[in-house]
Image (tube, rainbow, N blue to C red; front, side, top):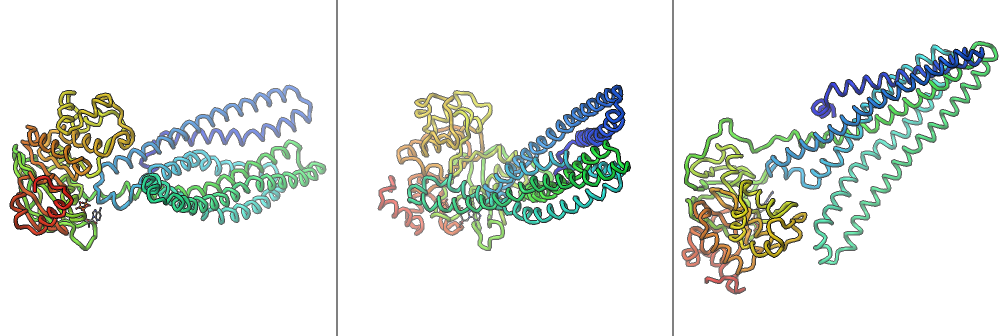
Length: 577
Ligand SMILES: Nc1ncnc2c1ncn2[C@@H]1O[C@H](COP(=O)(O)OP(=O)(O)OP(=O)(O)O)[C@@H](O)[C@H]1O
């Protein structure tokens, strides 16, 4: 947590918060002495003038205390909230730029919990640190010294009370501390199950698993609630216990104090101030003990945040990057091998092909054969394990990732749309696009008709594009890809959600589009009809290219291609064979 504090707190604001707190505590410590004087010199001797001056002094000191508290709260609150804001922003920036292979290590649910719950834990503790952590030790030491000065004998009473409090807090915290940690783990688990249920709600209903999922959620919810009840009962016990110990202390102080007053060894005012100091000491002690429970909890959150912030991006730019060598679009894979993380098995093995401007490379193969893995290597979502990929005759590793991403336009297997308007979503592809260019891309992607029907470019896109059908979302994502000026267009299984007629029309429109025809197009597909027009079709099996050629060549003598073809003819899927 210190590391995060050093990085995200503004030092002068922290100093200001501390200084304000010192003033506030000094006022709080001085007030009982003024009260004591007021009673012993003013009330006891019936000195009205003294009562007035001391009374005004008391109000003045209290007012300064309030101002100082306001100053401290201002800096503590703004610093802790700003620290949270900066951490969330840094986490988001890191996640956006981090390679997929690095993100895979954490998982979505955990990253969300880290960016929300964990940051809140740190924020909450930071405000307490900037207030109580400063206040409590000064108050504790100051009140002890002042109380001792007032009456060394009576100090023994609250030293005994302090001992009782120390034991009580220790017992409570030794139970509550581990429970707090347990609660944090259970929050993670609860969020995970809730998120899974939320994303899989349709599957749950379709399989009639509502009760099963409800029971699963209830199981974790009950565990969380049980721990929560124990934690809050234990910590709530602190306050009545504290009141009891304080009352006991006061009774003790009054008991012994009264005896000392009767022997004239203690003034009444001193007794009153002594009782206030005892309260201040016990409260400070309790605040410190609470902090020692909350800090380890926030420390666990800080470690989880640092884990993400400190992860080394495994995909980095070369020290000296180069510009693409050629103005003409081209793409080549040269003996490319690829494996995921530490996996023993190669996901792709010895992939070789090249394509020039105007050519289409299609990749076909059964589920899990490595099609998406292959196209994910083009924008460097993952790095090759061996071999080299070149775009425009330049190794992609030698270019900056920014430059590389400018050259590529991609539609992922699962269409991703952002909340906003259709136009805003389209402009992700090209910020400078005119309305005419957007409509042209929508026409090519066969999306113009339904966008017009829905209300044009300003039509709202809901979260996840939920107000559009699967096929419509795909077409919008394809339009966005086409709108971008790129040298390599990648469509990763993007036509699968389209009906056969739209699929055929869309590919025809793509073949006629000038921009697409001056670039290389890579199409991943499951259907023969989608890939049949391609200049070269790569057949993938188990991560290896087991066939390469045109539709006519492969349908003649490639057993893998023929097997796919036959299976689709039987289903009546292939419109060309
Ligand atoms: N993030 C990942 N981490 C580890 N292994 C992965 C990861 N993604 C895919 N794989 C593995 O790599 C292999 C190829 O997967 P890939 O997604 O490239 O296949 P695919 O041909 O695109 O499949 P589909 O047609 O179902 O989309 C599979 O065995 C899969 O289990």
